[in-house]
Length: 428
Ligand code: DSN
Image (cartoon, rainbow, N blue to C red; front, side, top):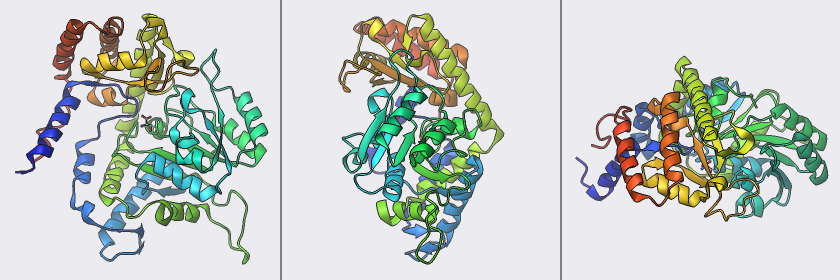
């Protein structure tokens, strides 16, 4: 029996919150029990700086096997020729790539954060925009989509050393082939950050970046449904993208540079308990059921998008190809902050989000981002999604009606009883 009631009571409360609410944050998901089990193990006790069979500590025989299993499964899942499973997060993975490929002051071209990009793709408040020189492409105001001709024009003007494709709030698929053509034109390396759609790519449901992008990073906890963490991969034939050799004529291998950038460049000891949980999640994603899950994620997103549009909401880009959508709330007369707060009081969790060309600050915003990875894991189908939109619409149109919010919360809590999440209390 755990004695630390202060902490474990709070964990119990969080479990209850997750069980009884509708989770629509696009970057969240619910791992399997096996993933949770792997994380809460004695592996957390082990120091293993280095890589399998090349460690700076003794006693690594078992964690070597675990980490190698995670690497091998990840390579199989994405058809990668190289994989590093040590990054503690997606931002750490990106930081390692920047450290490996760039010199301080080099120019990086990424999607503007306020158009759906990510902090670690060159934002001035992040290491990526402080140490490196950022330039951005955006989405079109009219269509909400990326105009590849404009990306090309921006790349030709800016001459970046690295181009990043990938986003946190972009509902459309990516043209990795065209990005590569642009990167080749300006002699840039191409990094795909697939943190959001990784699971859908692994399931073969979206365009595959592996054959076009020199390096691919991801988180493991969004559509990939693993533990919180990051990964770095390379497709085939990218070991020497610069075509460089040492003075002795040895090929400078990108995989070695990336490994060194993660450790010792960026991080210390790897989290072997999390790496074990990553291995479990990759094993799950290799099963045929994972493709079925991904298909339902997309069907649910389509159902949500259609239902919102039917109620007069404006979706940035007009819909979605993946698991998420970005909704402009201005036509409903509420800010993202107001919508988020009212929905959260009804146990429907979303996040406020800037929309492209937003007139509100990032703490207020004019939009909200929602995604279907988590509700699909709970077992939602398209009909359930339509019901959710009815609840959300009523609240968004009446954000100060506390009576409505409280009665909706009760309905939501009752509804969620039919979608069990984990057995028991999870903590001893
Ligand atoms: N947390 C990620 C997301 O919500 O998309 C960004 O870091």
